[in-house]
Image (tube, rainbow, N blue to C red; front, side):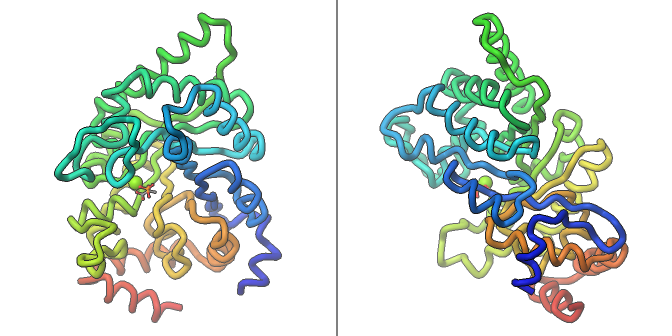
Length: 321
Ligand code: PEP
Ligand code: MG
């Protein structure tokens, strides 16, 4: 499979009955762009911007951020680049941010929560994004969202940042999309409400699994429990896809599960329109998509959701091959 898949890496991934599934790359820095393009990424589904902050000894400036975002946007031309705003806190600490010690950092002051509480820091990033967006197809994505209010506040700050730039006579990107990660169970449960506020949703199964199953993603002791194929997680995935489609927006996935080639058919069956993964797995997942028939995939995923456990779902998928 690998060699045939590599040959067709640059070809779109379309199911045997004609449904196009977009296959994007997850990247962590501008240097990852080449490998993403070589492996046939049709866009970037998750650009984790933390590197800018983690590798600096102070808050990165608007200019530093602008340069990085612009590099990636230019490389992808008119293809979408989903840039996630700062996802700090949890296990990612910034010494210069002087964050207070928290007993449960994963349940604490992280990601969009931190950004909304620190609007100046957040707006610096939003300004850099709006300026860089002039050079490509920018989609902005907010992490850890769980309320309608968070989306509205973030969008207001985006509007403020745009107004500031316009008043200064600086050009800003006009046709951007604004979306959220669905990575907290609450967000999946009220996905129908959140979908009305955004242009796209992307499911982050790494955090969604940890929070749904109450199993720390980095704790060896509970590693056997931490499993994205748990029927509870997959049911939230389906619910999110249905809510997105009800509002006519795209449902994507950018957690690790999206790049599991054994699960491609189930994921397509659950309704995902876009899958984003580390570059190396793109050619194989694209090849898997070409072998899928969507009606069959839907039946497989319906069956999967009635199974008792991840093990039963895995054996169902295995038998189906
Ligand atoms: C996720 O939570 O699934 C995700 C993609 O974000 P991160 O792994 O950066 O938390
Ligand atoms: Mg996450």
